[in-house]
Image (cartoon, rainbow, N blue to C red; front, top):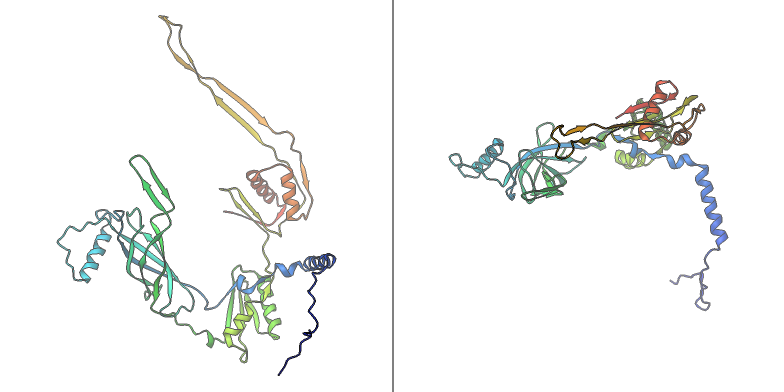
Length: 390
């Protein structure tokens, strides 16, 4: 059967012309107008980014093992007796009797092995592990982790790890200087652990699913439940508390529980946030939330700098003098510098975050002084926000 097309073989197809510049400008202008008209739609987040589902969680694994093959950077057997006992026990299990020998190698190290078992990891799959020196070993570079069982919180073995240790740092030393980069006593082995036991959990048999918010909030929880009910067309989601939303699973939903969660996690919700100011006094970092508001308050900021300079001088007698002695005479210079150009500034009530930042910047204050100003505004009761000092 011959399929007819719009172009005839007797008429050559005309090349497509690029759209005119005015048309492109009009399209771009329309896009900008749409973005400006609906800013909240672009501020919304997916439910999968702000919440977690019941049962979909990681499990922490930990184990104790030995790393061998080090280049003289292992544990000191005299200072770390547990390393020596671990070596003796391992060799005895292999039929080697070392109880009567002076076992003191320097190429072995006791380590702690940690890993994270992802949700629904099946038997035979592989996971990464992290290696951390436990004793006096100085470097794990070039070492090999021997077979190490990894246990869960219930004491059961869920994975077994073994492999070549990869270290990101290094140590280079000589007789007079030592250079260290990173942490050479900490390493990682990709795909080193094989899952031997699965965590029993049947997701498909659940009749209801709890959705836990990463940042509990009444408003955000209600928005999540409303978005789910609007998507399903019925009241199947309800808010239990600020951090939990209970969603009942429809019996005839296509794909069952898995299909429902795959669709629900893509729904977009605009999360709400508290009015909060986070201050890190060690680094001078200030993070101000969008909902922070300031009442009417007057701010004046001035710096007082006092410099004390010590320039001691040596007073000594004239040459060939038989009297007098050499003494150190102190010379102190004190300088006081106070800024006088800073004026009292009035902050109007209900200002936004941008107005607050612009007002503080107009005073010429740095992060350290800004921290003191914010704390003083809060103490005066003019800041409608919570200050969290890290």
